[in-house]
Image (cartoon, rainbow, N blue to C red; front, top):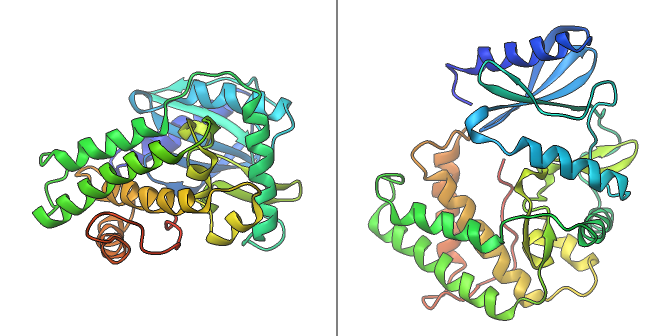
Length: 290
C-alpha cells in the first residue's frame, strides 16, 4: 500500500474496530503490499484493509465462512463481530481471528499436503463462481504485452516471459484433468502454524483449475505427499507460476518491497529452467510471492 495512504488505512481499521466495541490502543503492521494486514491491540484482532476500488472482500468473507462450516483448515473471522465487510474513508476492512504462531514456522511437507488435501476436499463440495486459472495467465500475458504497464522489461525478457506464459498455458490446458475450486496461491506465506494446526488465509485468490496449479505454489516436497499428482503437469505449473509472479514484479505500479530485484532474479531462473522450445528444465518450485 502506498506510503501516502498508509496512515489513513491504519486509522480506518482502528476506527472501525473501536466503533464495534473492540478496544484498540495500538496497531502493528504485519504485512504491507496491495493490502494492509494489522494486529490490533489489546483486542487482538487481525484487520485486513484494502482500497475500496481494489478488493473482493465480500467474496473472501463468504467463502471463509462456508469453508469453515465444512471443516476446512482456514482462518476464521473474529467471532465478536458480525461477519461482514466494513467500509470507512474509502477503505474496506475485514476483521479476523488472530492466531499466535505455534510450533516450527516451517510446516512439515506431509502436514502441508494433508492440510491442502482437506482444503481441496471441502472446496469440491462448494459451487461458487470463480475465475479460471487461465484468466490469471491471460492477465499476466496482457501485462507482458503492454509496454506502458511494464516499461522496464527489455525486449528479450519480454519475449521470454510472453513465450513461457503462452507455451505453458497450452501445455497445461492439454494435459490437465478435471477442474475444481482452488485456493489460487497456497504458498507458505498464506499458511499459518497455529495451535489448531495449519490454517490457510487469503482466499481472495480462489480460482478453478487442476490441483497441480495449487501445489505449484507450495514447497517442492509437498507434492511428494499429495496422492494422485501428475508430476509432469506439476513441473509445468511450477514454471507457469514463476512466470506469472515474475510478471507482477515488473508491473509499473507493483508495491512489493524489493520487487524489482526479485523480478530480475526470477527472470534468470526462468531462463535457466527453459529450453528454447519452452520445455521445463527441472522441478524446482516457484518462489514465494511475498
